[in-house]
Image (tube, each protein chain N blue to C red):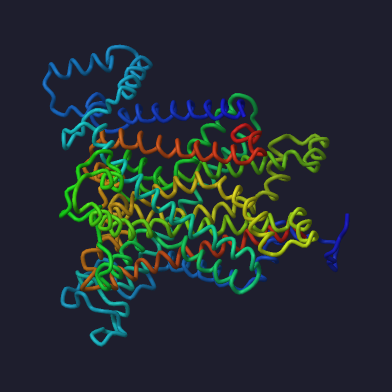
Length: 297
Length: 343
């Protein structure tokens, strides 16, 4: 086997570490990762960091433009909405709703999807064919439409939206895990492990998983950007988070009527969604790039 | 090709089975009485109820009930809407064309803008143009469509005043609905102001269609770029270069054709995506289509309408999906043996 990379010690980095080495070499992607980490920190610590409460209204300060405007007030950096609630605080609290919850949603979907996917990869015959057809049908329906269908069944509300999105994302994870596991199982190193007498489950856990984890993480970034957009879209349509919650999509919807007198109530939540989705996509892009580079080298 | 067609038909029947099954089971999943959910006959008199129960074979077992439902669906009876008491099938026939028109227009925009730009990016691979296009594409498919719609209305309708902000056509024009496809109806109508109406309808469709088209267009950019890059690395392109063909000849005669085929493969999925975006955009632009109707039905908890609307909309998406698959197979002989759904 040709070895073009020489390490001082006879030590091969694990697939994930190798991935990280390639990943960190692109600056724009590291910016994306930085933004992503920033959002995670914000999502966790927003109650401590935010200057005001997200629901506390100060009616004397209603519809204040951002601080750089002449009519602005420095204690309300990004202005206030029609009930005098601080936009900056609401956006920060919204980070934990829109971004943080999308992260949690993806984690749950990932756990369930990878579990079912890897088990189903080991089955053959009619069951497997049925699952395949079923997945084809489900995957051909766009995630947002499916989420709307499920919300229609469960009824509007934030927690129903989240379950709907989890259910929408699971088939994607099943599909990706399934095909990745099948692909790995056809390789010779798995055969070697099999000859050593390892059971299928053991092979799955110790040989296959470390090699497909990058594909799953990659799918997770796709899933997360879809989840952010779906949560926000459902919030905007009034099917997700109820209006008083500072969810970015719902904030946009409530700013809709104030569009002409207070455009910042529409600009800012939209920009926040855009920022979160771009950060997620940049990380995903970097992962794909790194996976490709590692495959080529 | 025959086997391919059979396989597709098989998939089609399986999907229709699943979709109808889903829509039938929705009537159980929704809160309230199952028969009422199925037919929309809210507060019906006992005699009406008995007739309906007989039609849907409520006394028999669940499988017979399903087939009774199926025969009703195929004879064009989706029940009546709970809130408006209108026949859902007619309602959908009236609304679906508007959505199809908007989606097709947006789809057309997305392809004619996205694919060439993707090719340009691939030709200038790893140069500033490529990076700029990629960056714009990244922003384009990250942007939430409802926000983009609001910004577009604010800029082009309110501040600049170029385009109308909502609706399908100005109410001044009276066009008799024949098919529901606005442009077709205008053209076959016998009014004196036909041409004015056409221009007016055109002005109304531009803004929503452009908003819907942005995200699919950026995906087309990426698809076209990847396809073109793969094609440009193949040996037959090297051979044409060795033969001394000019750059234009290589690109237009060989590379574009072969990469277009790869893009078409993914078009079906993108169309489904586009229809979803259209649903949201219809809400913002007040477009009288099926998406807005469906979302309003969800607000009003009109379960019969939701059930019928979902069935029609998802069948529509799936039919488009299969058609594009088929077109792809016709265009590309290599794909006919494709193991779609069989691996």
